[in-house]
Length: 511
Image 1 (tube, rainbow, N blue to C red):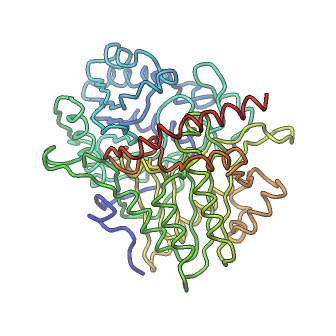
Image 2 (tube, helix red, strand yellow):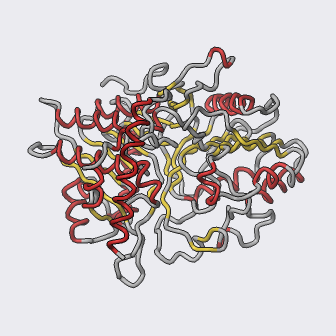
Image 3 (cartoon, rainbow, N blue to C red):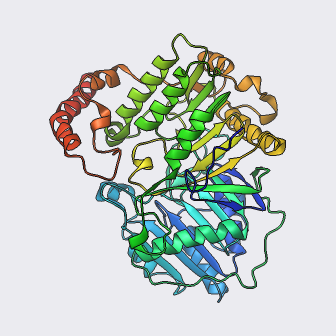
């Protein structure tokens, strides 16, 4: 069984880990970060798409009796005040103005001028045109790292049961939608050093002064087991990037584009023999859709069980135009590719838990980015299955892969997959067996609405009408490459007016 992960091909590097696992949903990750940061001795590095100064890291019983502040900025500031050796560096994407109304105002002032002198903050705008910085990772003392899809930000916290009326799921004083995401934890100096190199390279590209990191005197972690940990019996992890500037690199002149994340996704899809399980915020990538369709149509290959857990719909009109239509086309093409074959493909969304038995009015927001293949490879990180996550945005994913003899890692990956399905169904982990995770069983549950899983409706009638007007892969919101393709922009100019009118006319008709 050839290895899927290949350093220098679809992985930036492979590094030793002494412990590793997943933290599922914000409640457990926020607490794990808080507890780990309390013990930080030398350094905390934070890279993210978004940070919010007042986001509560601990809530409810977790916050009761906390000696230090529980909101992000005050907490990090207090850590600096009590530990004269601690240095904190925070690197945030210098977001586009289209997100201005969704972000904390005056954040540069908040983080840079109202914090301790050893708390260093920078906005990073060193991305390419139409791109963004989307890597979400933390390194503490060079020994403990977190990476995945979760930012330490508002609207990200939730518990795994996702009650529709969870009283602690509040941001900026207002309730927010149920939210599902995943973060990996990695213990080990080997992998920590690589992530430190990535951070310091990006820090300097963003205009920050060089700084040195020291792990001298830092006690290595043993028996690390944060609350809610789903342990992976792994000793190695592969790190893959999307980065048009190729960070980290010795010098900017030596940088080159890297698309390791999408290359690994494609290799994993091609290698699948039994099953593919995917959770993703968006699935609009033309390359990955074509890779999956090729595998589904490959003659003399074994039948696959494919499970996709997605959002029910785009949250806003701009998201629907940017990626929603492309996803509708992708899902339609995948369904068509399975007709008349032995493959089973289940495409679902999930709803929160209702205490009164009524169907919830909203779905749980899927923000996770995870792929499991044959229960022998697990990939998790910041990259969605979109064109931009494969080309213009910076992304970072971790891969755990078992060989044929590594039954412990295979078993731990299977347990995680079944645990995630149990969460989406509203079952206990113990009640869900391997067979209960197969597409036929999930389809039956979704059809009967037994549990929280639902059949994904896309493409809807409205989406199909829009797809008749324009090729969504030609729109510039989800670019295939760094290069500016004038033909795509021309098509956008010709077609977007009709598309826009279609959306608004349908909304007007519905009023």
